[in-house]
Length: 166
Image (cartoon, rainbow, N blue to C red):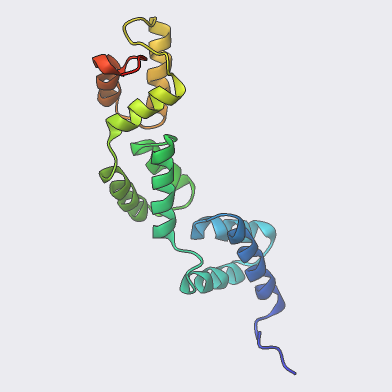
C-alpha cells in the first residue's frame, strides 16, 4: 500500500511542527515562519508549509490581527499606537494591522476603557485627593498602554471618575 502523503520527510515534519504550534495558540505567518526556521527547517519548506496552512485556513493574518486587537483592547493591555506597535512586533503587516486597529477602536469607547482600567486597577484613586507622584504614575501607566493623554486627563478630572460608588 502506498502512502497518500507524497511530501518529502522534512516538509512533513515541518508541517507537523507548525500544526503543533497552532494547536496551542494563534500565530501570524511571519511568526510561524520564524519559528520553523529557528527550529532548523529550510526556508523553502517553511514557505511551502505556510502557503499550505494559509490555503487550508489554519493561518489567517487579518483574522489573527482582528482577534489580537479586540483582545488587547477589551483587556486594557494596549490601545492606539501601542497596539499597532505590538501587532507589528508579532509580524502582522502594517496594512492589516492598521485595518484591525481601526475596526477594533471604532467599536470601542476610549474613555470607557480608561474608566474600566481605573476601576479595576486603582479602585480608590481620587484625582483631587492624590499626590502628584501618584497622578504621574497612573497617567504614565495609561500612556504606556497607548491611551490618548487628553482622554486620560478628561476621565481623571471628571467628577464621577473618583473612587466612590457612583
